[in-house]
Length: 236
Image (cartoon, rainbow, N blue to C red; front, top):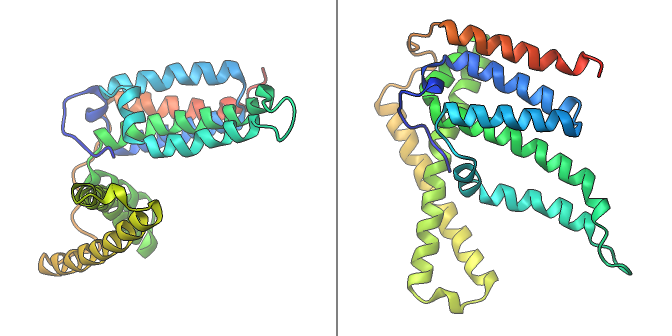
């Protein structure tokens, strides 16, 4: 799973707010009018975003392989026919377009995660979503970004431990049960440790946010976000 990595790329230098706005505009453009020509153009744009963050599509697919595997089930199940001719590729066209839309958004989101500090994301949310709800949303997003990679590493370590002890000879159900039980126990333990750590550090709902300011590149990104958001309204 991708996490933030410090760097000096073009995407790293952008403000978190402009990158969030671009994600929203890109998602609107992808899902509003998913014609093949538009998807091809948006795929090129997603490639530019990945390049700006020095992130390759293969790296994203490798880190989110489980998401890709689940998405691939849609076109495959649609193409399979229970009876002659058993396979109808034309039926997989619509699900394939839907999967392509999700993957394009995933690429842009992955570039955001890799190039944006969690603290900056929390500050951007709390600055623009008022009240306690914005504070809770900012804290929830920040903890999710930090907590999920840790839980994933715990599950992988449990899987490696089972394999090292000859667990591959056990049934799939038994291995899944062991991973689920141990993984849940570790997740609860992590949550307890996190609660103690937050109290020990005098956790604040509204901490001093990091300095945030738009640069010349941010205005260009916001302009692109608005153009993408209104692009479905333009008639072909």
